[in-house]
Amino acid sequence: MVTNAAFSLEHYLFDKVYINLENYNTNEYQIDFIPSGVFNKKDKTYILNFGFTATCEGIIDSFVSINCVGTFKFNEINDLAEIPPYFYRNSIAILFPFLRGFLSMVTIQANVPPILLPTMNLTSLEKPLLEKTTQE
Image (tube, rainbow, N blue to C red; front, side, top):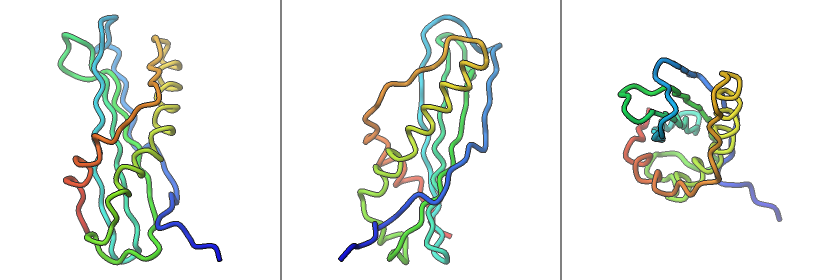
């Protein structure tokens, strides 16, 4: 007997892409990930907003900002409180390769040294995502 996964990625898209090379220099840069989510009780979907920013040292505003939106579908979840804890870390891990590849492509096309993110352990984003999750 085959059982269905508790959730699946329905689709993803990049709804915001911002590059401002006036904020870019050859100094070191800092990266940041900003996760948030909304669980839709009616259709049992979870919308994950997975944001990324890169800011050069000595400059206040980011030179790259990207937001990836992933829609996940649950089989048996009817309420936000029923979402299993592993979902939060796994949903980020599922979207990260898409974000990483898109970020590399966008920065290469901008004709600046590309941002090539390594494979990363993003389990530290689980708690911020849980805290920034709402239900509609």
